[in-house]
Length: 372
Image 1 (cartoon, rainbow, N blue to C red):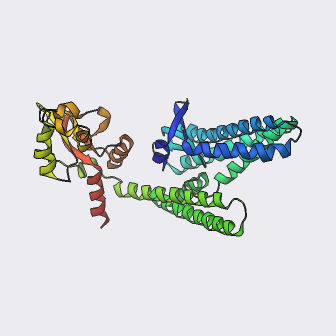
Image 2 (cartoon, rainbow, N blue to C red):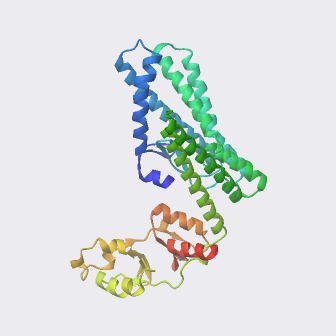
Image 3 (tube, rainbow, N blue to C red):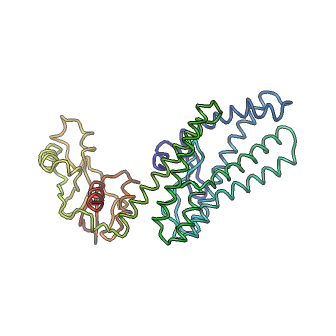
């Protein structure tokens, strides 16, 4: 889920070394909130102001709301760093924000503290905005009163025990603490999260048919929570199945390599056509030195008329140290690396020598066999 959010987002800032990104769906909700506040809330809360002032305050309130969401996610990130869990990025989107952690908490207490930090930060912001609101009048009072209420609602909403929301992670921490089983706790929390998501879906459907406001939002929220809980459950299942499995247990050892001096024509005829679908890419060697990998993706970029003159060395993807693992690396780490770098295969190196190749398809086949 987070990966799809990252693909549809743009980096706008870096705070504490963490990239802050905005998903395209954020602009939809930003516009709706600004319009709603400018045409309904502020005209009723401060009727003495000119029309232009409502739009200015609506825009400022929407920006401060999303700044509050960013602060909420940064609170998670701050505590995560205390437990040496890196944060890849924070993405603001239509339903709030997501902090993408590069790992799992080391123990239930860490999970609880990381999860609860978000709601606590929202309650603190709510209290701060409330104190400001009661000490000002007119338009500013309406602005800060809105921010106090919305941050309080944000804090309460995130405490709903629907994984992977904060409340769901608190629930996972409690189950994990009692059972001493992280994977079982994740499965239980995800199941409860899916049940809560279904409640939102059915209640949203009911409100749509009865004509009550907010039904569509409840449907969208229920769908989002259900998909997020399902994704978390699948990831936990994958982690459990691959737990303790090393790259050496899954990698292909008898790999087929090709020379960098070959032409594309020769590469197609002697390798891709000969070895078939099971080989989507080949390591490229030159006098025993590993240069990189060539796949059909690189070949497709070469005009057909040039296949007889263009060499493998001209189009291969040069090797980068960050795209390799060792035989003793965890398979889960290798899979996460392939997903992060958008690679179908990565090389296995030992003592500066190529000893194997690990692919997504190879991992999938291993899981199919193990699952039977």
